[in-house]
Length: 343
Ligand SMILES: [Zn+2]
Ligand SMILES: [Zn+2]
Ligand SMILES: [Zn+2]
Ligand SMILES: [Zn+2]
Image (cartoon, rainbow, N blue to C red; front, side, top):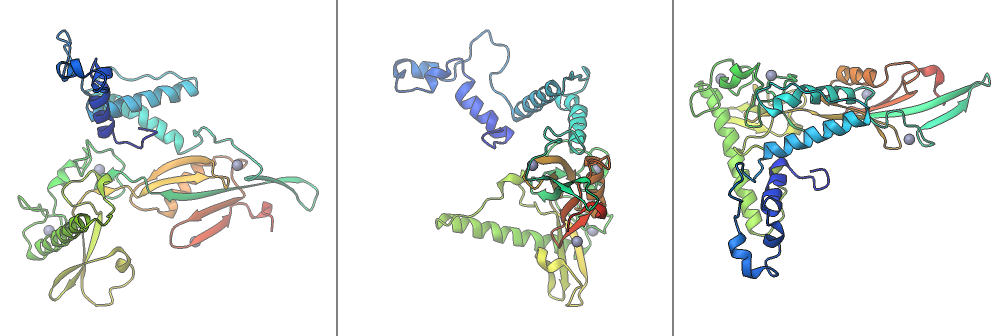
């Protein structure tokens, strides 16, 4: 999983195919064992009361459990998990949440790092030695599914769900953001004609793209797959914006959504797929060493980044003299303590 960048499903597949059999050495070397190969295939000893196949949940649970044990061992702690939870997933959840929140503050392994690239000592005009440290904050794109309720941080029961357990009752809501009516059976929108028109426009466009993609593939053109989304129903964007033109709603591309509508038409927003967390935010030193990591939900709001930075630098001494934050619209460099910044 770590080295191959594999999903839990693919790890399980590799294990089941290549390693799960007690006669894996025979099955994996057909040429050498051709005499007994056929009889060995699909062989599971009779006294085995459990399956030899693992599921994707098993891979994920194993990965998380092992990672938690390693983490505790590194910090000299003991992993304590409840015994009576409904599932392994529920058992691990609090320990995982605890570790994740430690990573938002000072828990990262190399938190105390300093090197010649990222830590300078300068002499001020009074002859005192001053430190000059910098840190940058930026998002990367390891997005994952989150509850469709904006800024909700609860985990999803599984990837097929769009809402967390607390917000499960929203499951039946119309996909149009400002509509609180329930969607009709077999649709994602309520029975208002303008809402249904959005759904038709959305899926017509998705189908057209899907067909174009498969035609290009057939013609031998390399097309990037959106296969990481975990969604198989074609609905994977988060919010889409429609321009309500006289001829019917037209879906706008992300770069057309900003700013005022120049057509004067009404705009409507809808979410047909699941919502994705905005991104994982990292605070790092200019030399590339990562200090902390946090998941930002909803939007990369400056206030959320501010909280994250405060958790990472809880004391005046730990606060960097230069903090670089790229909010993707403009980059600004702010001195957290102007007195100590070199020109
Ligand atoms: Zn460094
Ligand atoms: Zn929720
Ligand atoms: Zn509606
Ligand atoms: Zn700025």
